[in-house]
Image 1 (tube, rainbow, N blue to C red):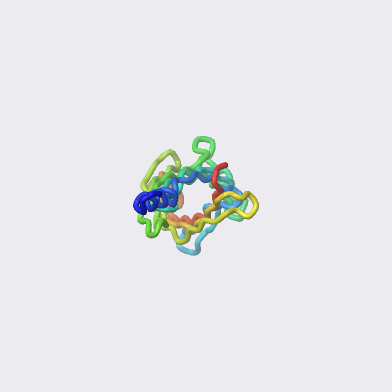
Image 2 (tube, rainbow, N blue to C red):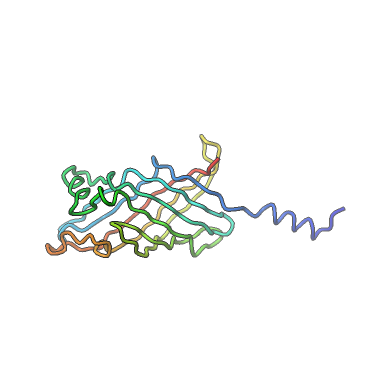
Length: 188
């Protein structure tokens, strides 16, 4: 007969989750942004192509994020603006075809992190950036029969810090709001 203490220890060990690695689903993940247009309005757009992984321990709330965004997939809803943003005067996608965000989960309450503290690499420059997690939920995927998680997070950055100061002389504000909807499926 096992002692009650040993039984409790075995049960506690069985309940503890290990970190799980998830592949970001590019068909359900779209970083979107909002940038000033001479103080007159805000241009909104999104990046349509991205990939990456998330590692998440649902018990402790620990984990990491590694996302690569294809800058050629930028979509303002205006083809002329898309073409300009991809060109040498802004993203210069021939030289810097992608942006990356890498970070770690922080501020967990009951296994759910409240933010991702990391770095954004854009235009060949890497700067600190923190994303606030507004929502995070995991459940079994109804089709794949594997765990999957979804989240909504946001943050902001100063694009001039990345050498992207176009329009500043015309009164454009340099702050960009970034919002990311993400869904990721556990690796097999």
